[in-house]
Length: 216
Image (cartoon, rainbow, N blue to C red; front, side, top):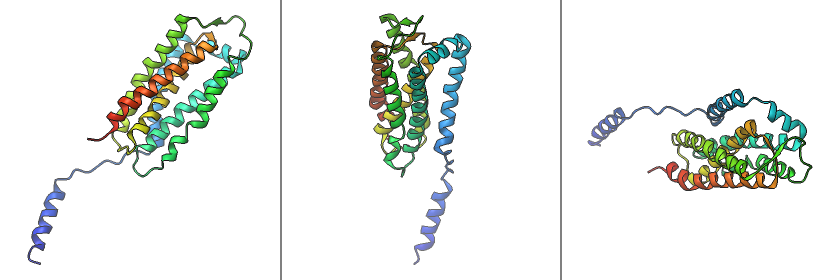
């Protein structure tokens, strides 16, 4: 019993050195912050390219509008899933949140290979295909970096899975931004390039993002 005062003094001394931990905002609010950056980029692209070509493509081929909706929804739900997975104790089922919209995005994109060509719209050539590939990858790099930086403030217990979802969110957001300046009709080569770009982004995030999200 004589040691009790010394134990209490030690606990008080250790407690006095602790700094308060600021509670993180809820996942939906942090998602909105990331999406605000994506929206700002979209506003710059719209000011540069306008919306005429994008709206013309959507009006002439509703499947392209459906694919764009799927890409936007995938970006939103994947970002929300990543922020939710970064919170310890959250269910792994959050990873399934972007699956329905991703299926819509992929299936609607594939419909463009089956329908007739849009009159007056150019067909994708190799130069445009490389442009699509580089556009998605180039925009995914900063968007992934921002997401990973925001997620490191939490404590992801499944860093690799969270990084995969980060890659999906960034690639989907980049594909959505590409719609603004994409002036060609959908074709099999277009679908292949988009799929390749998304795969590269997801795998790169799985390899690098998983390490960055792992706490030392």
